[in-house]
Image (tube, rainbow, N blue to C red; front, side, top):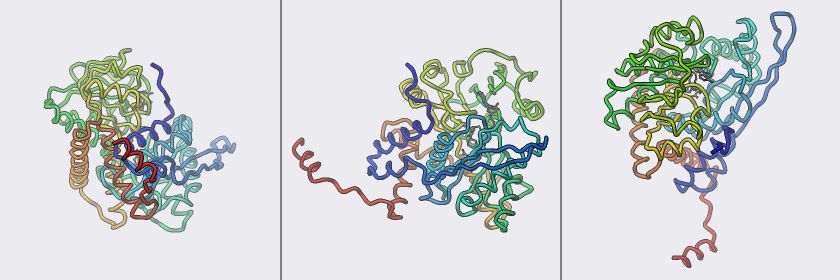
Length: 432
Ligand SMILES: NC(=O)C1=CN([C@@H]2O[C@H](COP(=O)(O)OP(=O)(O)OC[C@H]3O[C@@H](n4cnc5c(N)ncnc54)[C@H](O)[C@@H]3O)[C@@H](O)[C@H]2O)C=CC1
Ligand SMILES: O=C(O)CCC(=O)C(=O)O
């Protein structure tokens, strides 16, 4: 069966609508949440190394700020477009709400491949983007962070440019900064650590001993690599890894720290000596836990039926389509959804922001401990809700977060309960 849609914005809306319906939310709730509150498209010139001038386009979507300032990453990837940014900003709103941090959702990006530019060009692009979105971001307004192909250095340039543009130094305007420049300890590791922690929680629920578990990871960037490192620390064996250059396998376990070192130097996993290259498809391999940690729409109706894993723990945003979700649920596979599984990044971004506002520096263990508590509590609540309502964990996670956002929106007066029409009451009485 062909996929109904691979448009991520339509997918995000379908997920929200499905959960609103299950929750019996007032129609006004979906009406407000189906669109971002504000979007901005910018175009700005950058001087290239060869003396030419090139115009670049960037996007920022601010989905909802009922629970606090907009929050979410900036992505540099050729596929970035306004619909993708809108979908990613929607997911951010629910992700922040799932772990109960006081933010709404935002996301931004540019359709570029950063490997095509020199460091100097990349710095000027990042600065141009920061200057262009400066009017709508800020420590208490909208707080960007790293995402695919962006990092602490890019956040530092953007913060510096923002400070110059506004004449005021507010380090909490960006998170995911380097530790030496107002960053937080444990932020770099946070998303992957959270993914590994959530996989472990799911394994415990299914009475699976993590020391006997094999793992397959798609994507070996910030999220995938630390997810691999921590799940290995918890006792599991990572036997397969895929990135944009191919897939490698080792049934005895791929040493995560060595692969991270290799990846740092070569910027890919291809050629790593501690594993064999394979043409086999990662998602149909015989592993216990799959961690999709790359991009959207990777698990579809085409490959969901081939999955042998008992647990899927989503490090990436939107790696599974709604059709695939149904197949996975019907097959009894436990899927820990992105808005919970990868919420560790934004959770520690929140801790970074709190430290910035108060000029604190918390120790690594304290930050990671705080992250672990928030995420494990959210996991427990969602697990229970999923059982109580006989729904998958994604629907349960949306139900929990939509309820919180809906309550905040109602208290703010953004909507009042839609009055029940007299005809509907009469009809209900007549049919009873
Ligand atoms: N960095 C963060 O803190 C957070 C990231 N995420 C999400 O996690 C995912 C990955 O983000 P990062 O690790 O930060 O990005 P990254 O840029 O550090 O790494 C991306 C990885 O995906 C791989 N990849 C790209 N295209 C691929 C393909 N077609 N097939 C297989 N692998 C492919 C790349 O080779 C690379 O290993 C994204 O969906 C992102 O939105 C979610 C929460 C927080
Ligand atoms: O750290 C953040 O604020 C946002 C991370 C992010 O973009 C995400 O969770 O998808």
